[in-house]
Image (tube, rainbow, N blue to C red; front, top):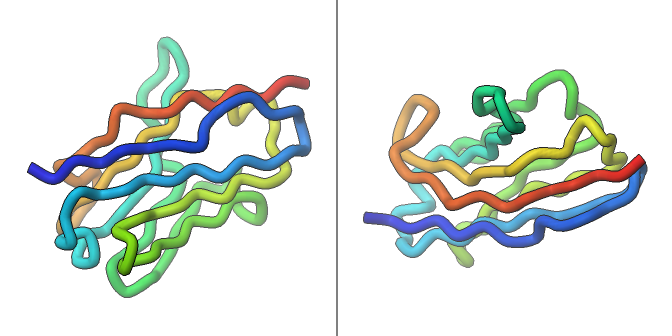
Length: 117
């Protein structure tokens, strides 16, 4: 089973930036659609951004223009660059990947992002 390991979370001030990384344990990563989800206590996971194996990206409206998802297939890594952070972005962020429709079958353990006002 492919493992996904996130890093890069932490504390940021409103208006600041963080970059999340997710490393996959297998080169099959290059064939997967990858995504970042987030979850706050008491709420369902929310799809934030996705990127296909060919590099097509999609974002939820709330993060458009602030967040950028990208991938480096040579490093089996997907990134989420988060700029202009808002307190509402506070959540646990999860990396997800797999073939075809989202969510894919593999999940990371999550990384906490906290944005202070």
